[in-house]
Length: 307
Image (cartoon, rainbow, N blue to C red; front, side, top):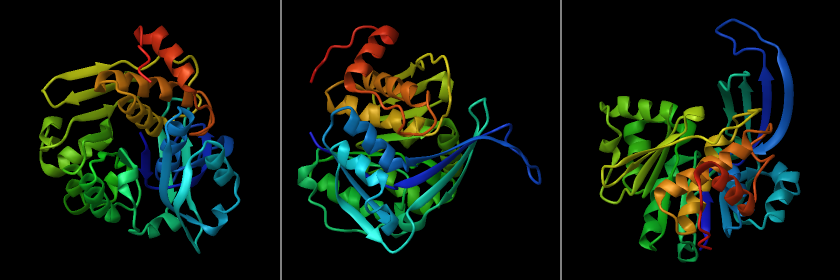
């Protein structure tokens, strides 16, 4: 089993604020932290920490070379041979969150805007996960991955709100086996296609659609028409929601790769997200697989170890 994660890698600046300001308002920053992030980087680090063989395909700036982030990826055993280094700044994300878990995000794409289509030996991979990033390159990569029998998953994330749904997002949906959204993203997508039913997003090869809903857990829409609601793992202290979605998707994919069904995999994703939101930063509190199993058992009951 070998996972390839495609998308953006970024340096994050995370700010806790007194409140999220409206237009022409100001607010105070209570706490500020600089962290490693980007949807692809976050997902790859979660998978690596959970013991899955993982490679990362992204475009970064020259400032990424010999950085702490690059060293972290290597320490986690993540293959970075598919990184492209550009004469640009690595992407930056600026995230502002209040104490109720609400967020505003400002993203500078930098080098990630120049993600190029490069030769990839997809025969090395069993699963390919596409995160938010330069989606214009995704269709060709998805087609190649599928030609080699890879299981393809897609989480468009924030790209949903500033790209053409018809020309860029929708064409990737039909090439994906698993689709991931949060409740705001799927509403935006369904509004864009004039629909109200998530089931209308199923294509010939869609296996499941996963919609996350924050503290209300997540919902799995299955191909057989069954809908399963997964409760979130109770967390005493939520310090930062940054990376919760990425970690949830990565946990789900690892669960699938380890042989569990979609319902169990979604629970695994919830367990992983539960760890991440307890610290500021998307990669600051990543659990091991043993820690995931322990928390899963306390929350949902017995989990047989398949691998």
